[in-house]
Amino acid sequence: MRDFPGSPGTMTGLILRILQFVFAAVSIASMASTAYFFKFTAFCYLIASLGLQITWSFVLALIDAYALVKNRALKNSLLISLFVVGDWITATLTLAAASSSSGVAILYFNDLNICGFIGECQKYQLSVAFAFLSWITVATSSLIMVWLLASG
Amino acid sequence: MRDFPGSPGTMTGLILRILQFVFAAVSIASMASTAYFFKFTAFCYLIASLGLQITWSFVLALIDAYALVKNRALKNSLLISLFVVGDWITATLTLAAASSSSGVAILYFNDLNICGFIGECQKYQLSVAFAFLSWITVATSSLIMVWLLASG
Image 1 (cartoon, rainbow over the protein chains, first blue to last red):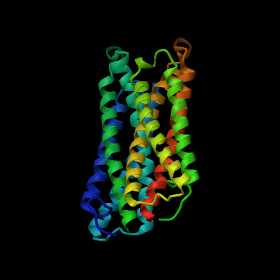
Image 2: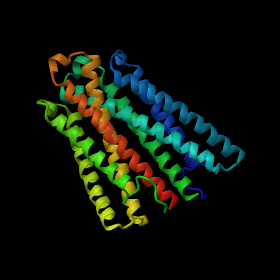
Image 3: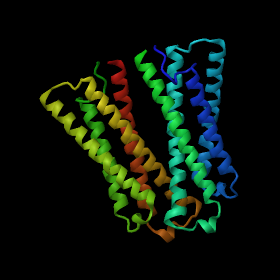
Image 4: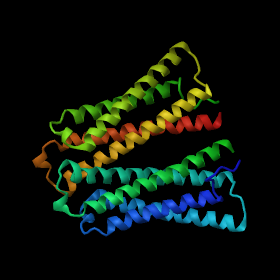
């Protein structure tokens, strides 16, 4: 297994994990700070899904940091397979959550044009935008993992 | 490259492509038969995205059928790479479309409980369900393609 930028135990890998964590945290914070998010199934699902995403990214960031500090390579095929499966599951859930929430946010903001009435649309939009950013970073990690496993 | 069930040029591969095509077609037909789908951005995106999905699955089904009739194996690495990229792009778009539409459909059916007023909710739900079925079959194809490429 060669060392790609972004593979586990490298500095770029750690930065990717931290970005995933931060984007997901901003998304959850923005959504949770609204008064009526619990009335929308899609927004509750976003929080649940990004909660899982945060946990996963946090654990992987810890593993990356440990490997960096101890200067140990993480090139075990079994470990990488586990990362691939976890990354794909969280990436799929995050994309589904971001998309369903964006469907609802666009409905209120564009289609019905009743955002003044709801009053919290900016926060919904911010949350959806950060959820998509989080998905992009997880998808990048997943692709790197698959590539690493395939080339190993 | 070994012969997995579902790899291009096999009968199971052809069946998977036909299923993708049929599920996406039913989803589009169900959505397009409603009177007000064009008022919802999410539903228009569903039709556009599944339109791409149908085209992709149809072309791949033709290639599979040709390979089966001519009894020729499709084991070119470059061709499989192209299938992998295409499958992942269409799978991502289909999942995003199905999720955003399901967000809106659940909003009307569950959260707001105004489906009687809209009157076309069953068709929206049917369309979303078939979009998800289509996504499951494309995701299966994508995984088989990645596996095939990785093991080749």
